[in-house]
Image 1 (cartoon, each protein chain N blue to C red):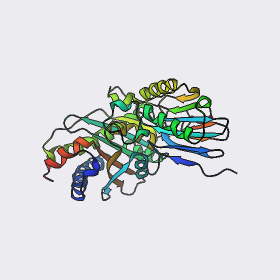
Image 2: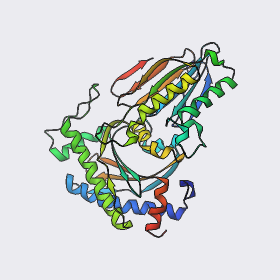
Image 3: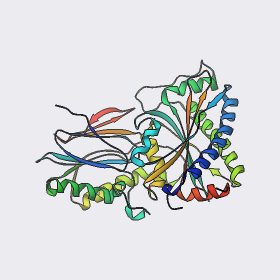
Length: 209
Length: 162
């Protein structure tokens, strides 16, 4: 497979299904972590040129906390997790209790204190770990992710950085998107699987599609 | 009369005559290169993503790279009547969005983009008159073709004109 454009409908569905199983596992972890039921939406696969890909995340200027991990090795892929910036306190409240969370929204360039930042990174780590575990069982591969990186800023700025490893190979990006919501809370998480073109063959082969 | 800005996305470019405004949102490690001919008041913006086309395996979209993209933008401006000797440049972007210990090469791409853009501008003998580059934050820019002003907005640092 040379490019994402070679994917057929069945293969796209298979990728969505792989991702769905992984996200199901991740949602279970998150549910235990914050003590709320998690609802999952039907996964979406978006194949679009770079200029259009930011539209799936609600526009380039949408303010988000973005956690990113890169999986190196035989099957390189990226995992990106977004939550809207204004929902960060809701998530932290569930972890630390209402009294402790104060997110500094002043113009100092620093939005979260150290503890809040590492808490968010840890959530990303746990979600990605659960996700990759299930992906690994399914495909009989071992996925070893990098440590998570975190940025609270414009979604387009974060995505642009993440997509550059694909930029040298393709003019398109493929993003498998899973959205989950915490029941009774204003918390919507956006989980993106970003496979590289060379990853597609291996992923699909491992599940026989 | 102020009209709606012309929007461009990652790896796109547009040129327009005054009074058009060209906008590109959510620059992280990417860079917006804005060129302007003050005499005929034509401007162009490109949203480049990567430093070097010779490292790419896919050259269909030349607007993706600093080297081929800037040349493409110059060509389009000249085609529309600009004079290369009059062109001036302003640039914004080139951040490192993730502060991390990990030394994944992709995380340094902002810096490499800045270097590549400056090198290509120098090579083309186009004067860089102002810049807002680097740091760890995202930027949205609006380029005003009527006076060559570049408005740079970010979440934490507010807006400024360069």
